[in-house]
Image (tube, rainbow, N blue to C red; front, side, top):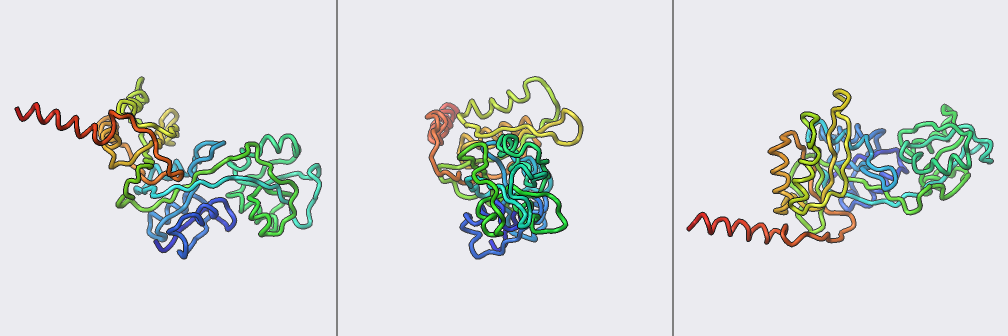
Length: 308
């Protein structure tokens, strides 16, 4: 791949994730102002792929990504990257240095959610100002057109910009991790590794009793573990939802393909978002009755009866 878009500007955690992608080394890196713009540039072919945040261990799914990837021309996730998250509070070069003097703090909504308890205890009178990204908030401190006093951002960016550090390690949960994904136009899938993840979107054509149970049963009966499931509004009207799902396994696995085929029969609007290697690379436990070999034995047994 020759070009990668990412949620910018320079200095975001998304850029840190991009720098962990082997294919991105030496490629053009294009910082953009929103997840939607980054994914749309992949769809139009302006870039080959985009790196966007998908999920945070504290705050859950990144709604902008979940919604943008669920509609429009099909895209595939081809890789995931995990980035440890830590935050600093930085101020203007000529601004107040005492926490009690701060009136407003800018950062991304997911970052603010991860420092909210610290902020309530240490800067209770500072108003929150939403920024497009943690880096955008920090860069804004160097711009006279912005009026906020401080920003929450990544330690590496605070040091790079030379901004005064007002507080370090302000995250509420130590060891927090954000999961980023590399998204490309739909095409051939990465080969199975034995430690894979598959993502999909399942829209509900109608809100009816048992719909979620029907979805879950397709996976549970085939021994497929779901690592994430979230409901999101489609935006059409109140009560209209889709499910965003991550599961353990690759589409090439018999148990996964059987589950998705059954799901598609009931919910033909299901959208496949890709099968790709898990970032941890740790093999998962597959029930003995759902291995590829078990499926092959089952089919052989049925054939033996039909061929009599």
